Amino acid sequence: PNAGSLVGALNGFNQRLLRTEQLGEGALPLIAIVVDIAYHNPKTYPICAAILSKLLTFIPESEKVSVVERIQAKFKRIPNTGYMQIWMQRVTLPLDMASGFEYDEPICKVLAGDNQQLWNRAWISSRALNAALNAKKIIDSKALSQITPVISPEEVELFVSKGGGGGYG
Image (cartoon, rainbow, N blue to C red; front, top):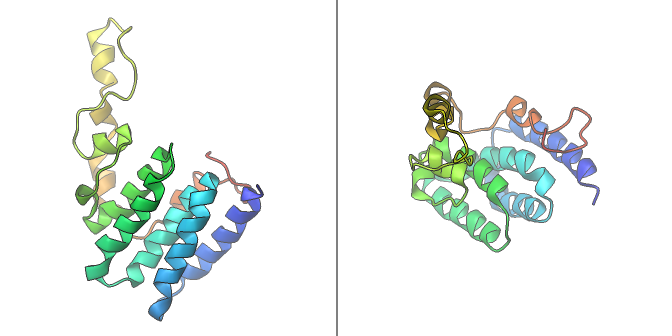
């Protein structure tokens, strides 16, 4: 309930956090709070992933894998978290950690190089159309090589309405 208000508040927090250059010892408690918010409010996944991507910059390199493992372990306790897996893969990919994690979501597996079928194409008789629907063709390698460790507000805005009301697009 009231996830729209929560998304708006998280957007404001993210804007302030992006201007922060030092956080000290406060990153781990903030990560725990953000993960808990996302755990209970799926509409917040995009903005929470953006916040997590920034908070991870304040964590020593030697601890990042452990922190991400704990985040993923928490989300494995609840069903239907494929959307969060996509966002977590986005968080871990530019940190060269994505390959160390196993994602169940088919689109995450495609990005990892597995041959997954995202759409039921059994009814399509045209070979050309079947080839065009190959999931590996949706991966833009150039765009992937340009992503940054911190998710930009513009990237998150694609999934959050301008009014801060939340939603998936």
